[in-house]
Amino acid sequence: MSTHRTFTMIKPDATGAGHTGKIIDRIIEAGFTIKAMKWTRLSLEDAQAFYGVHAERPFFGELTEYMSSAPIVAAILEKDDAVADFRTLIGATNPAEAAPGTIRADFAESIAANAVHGSDSDENAAIEGSFFFSQRELA
Ligand code: IDP
Ligand code: MG
Image (cartoon, rainbow, N blue to C red; front, side, top):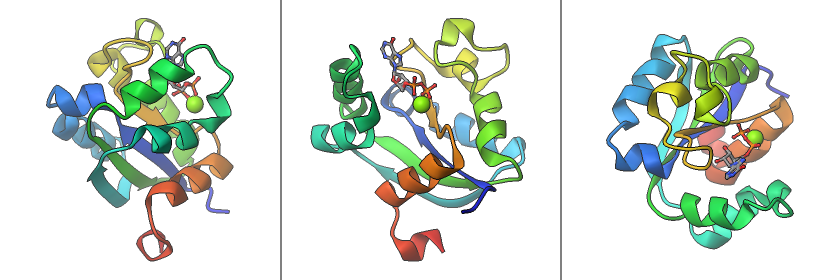
């Protein structure tokens, strides 16, 4: 288990608004190293699989349609305490509650279209990274 890695996506609202470069700058300035990165797009089925843990939540349909509506950027990031430090960098799920200066406070549109994803545990970081990247890309 690699405790120094996390997984992120720059979500469709942020790629569509032209915020991709600014968000990548924030991530690098915060001390993360980009281990792997790709510009890609999720099908509805991909989004339903990625967010399967949320299948029973009332917002599942809205979330999966939104996440498959336009391109995303997927990335593996490295840093000491990567999972916790990245959650701090992005801020609360609801941008109205995100701390000033966090990526969601500055770039998110709404609780659904909230600019970025960040893994919530080392275990999920590994699972989510493997969803997008091959073993060779993860090495
Ligand atoms: P997180 O992304 O901060 O970890 P989660 O609770 O894991 O938040 O929810 C996953 C994603 O589902 C959120 O990032 C957001 O895009 C969406 N989401 C969460 N709660 C709501 C909601 O109440 N309405 C609409 N979308 C939501
Ligand atoms: Mg989550």
